[in-house]
Image (cartoon, rainbow, N blue to C red; front, side, top):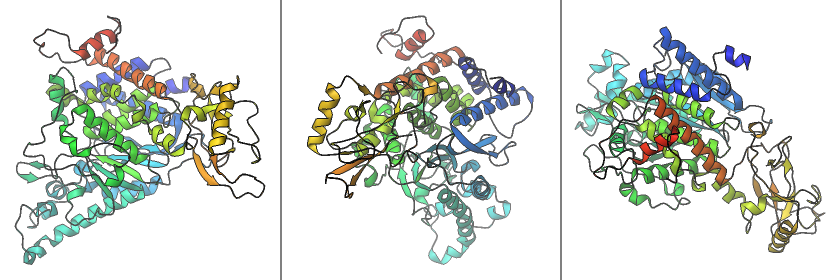
Length: 581
């Protein structure tokens, strides 16, 4: 405790005050890594130290220094590379990325992306890096950062080819341009591959961002040389921050708010490989009719499905500049995975809220001061939206359960255990054996750690259910309430054929884990747990936001009714009792 205080971290129990200070600073000052000195710098340093302390609770990490913005002017001054879960076993998920090589690739590739906002890993999940960035830089910005000689070289960006009627004979004029794009985008691709990123999710509603008639940015999906053809590209157009003024003007109500897809600048259609949509049961052809709630929900389901795939590939999410729509989905992903007990397992609701506000939004350059002045409240929308993703259908555990459960069993049945007479952990001659070891010191909390087998036949299932139902010692695997009982990963169930000559059974057997050492422990939560955890985060945010930043009042409706969200704020500060929303 004393050490934390000495480093400038808020003491335990002061989470509300720390968050209030963060929101106040966020709403008053535009963070830039290159800006140093003064009282603001001291506050930023305290925020940074708090973030590092929260990351360090659950992960071993390295830091890429960016103290003066030399790597990126509006990225954190201490860019965190998560390497592995702290205290996890030797066989737990671990990143293969080395910080020295990563830093070299970043320095080489940062020119490839808008505003130098390079591909940056921000979440580590099952050994996969979830990354964020801006979109690809276009001709104007890239040449502006590479010298005036290029500007007057007579060339044009490969993304301008549609606007310029250039014949094949004139291609030599563009040779220097092509070489430049080959070089910088080649480094960008090397960085993506080093981070094992396979999936690139582009949130832009445009193919190219146009200002004053010029293409100022490009994107992977319209790279004419098809340099990114080896990646799985997803075009999932999502409204920009300007659209969220409509959200504010509708009394902060997202239900029924539909983006106008017929605007002239909107030219990026939704495009997702069929292989990634088959398990989601979503009619993607209807995306232009979705309101803001349904669109955000479906995109989040897609992202969760991608990171839960069986391969080891990472994910990149980006919009144009990477500081509005990008942090929205990165923050929702972080909070959703945390609510499932899969990442940041030791953090309390107030702590994960602080971390995602500070790191995902503030330190990565979201322009809250500007957005508030324009009423573009995408930041507020993110945390109020948590009420729409509390159900199990948004849980990363849902697909894991679906993959791992034996045929004919429900999760609740799998979690019902007989603490006594569970069967042998080594013999296959008993009717069945399903084992879990209780976590040390965690009453009522269990993790898959024993290697015990059971046949998947219908008779064995029926016998197992009957035995569990009649046993007074049957217990339900549930989450421990104390924070110290939270244990870091998941148990998996693999279907294997028995080949042991000592066994009298020929059925398939279900192996929970593969060995006591190879199964990382995690804090798995139930659907009701997920809901309560996300609601606690949302409630903490609403209460603190109302005390610090507040909502801008909107004209009263003809009926004179108080807006639903303002009503929530009144209750949030204790001025009115709660009721069902």
